Image 1 (tube, rainbow, N blue to C red):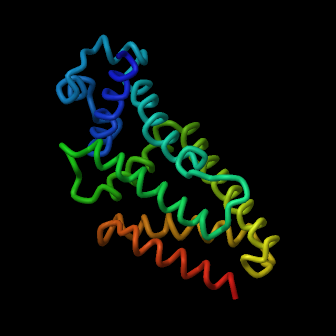
Image 2 (cartoon, one colour):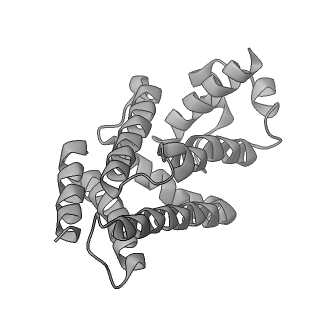
Image 3 (cartoon, rainbow, N blue to C red):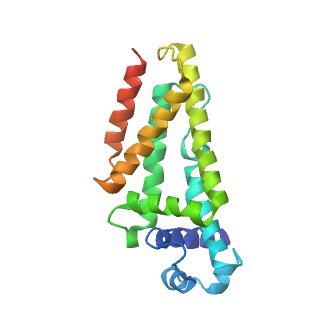
Length: 202
């Protein structure tokens, strides 16, 4: 029961962080929105900023960890990994959208990226951890690409680091465009990734 309460409190607080500046959001607002008391909040942290830190670790860093986000199996093809990667993105986005149903920003992608940018300002070490998560993701892309070359799935590449970074950038670049323009469209992202995949098969 306590773990369920934690998940509920953290998810609802994350929803508030998507629509507030970290420094401006008050514990009173958290209490009013979540129904949890100050004592319940301080069970998980000693200060407001430390509490928000725990929420960010749970709702951002852990959710974006590639090993949690993508159902990777050893030796899977690049094509199957791309699909698993896209499925992980859709699943993670669905969780976020379900979490903020009652206070859904007009552009959830924009709100999420603004929160990520705040992390480096308020929690420099968590910003570094987020960057490490991104590097781990590129490392997994490179592993899959190396196997794809060895199996003959794609043509040999001179610089797999660049190819891996390009796959990652397709997602992050598309997310940026979605944050300032049209809504995030998984089908459009898939088309871009599969187009790049096909160019590697030549």
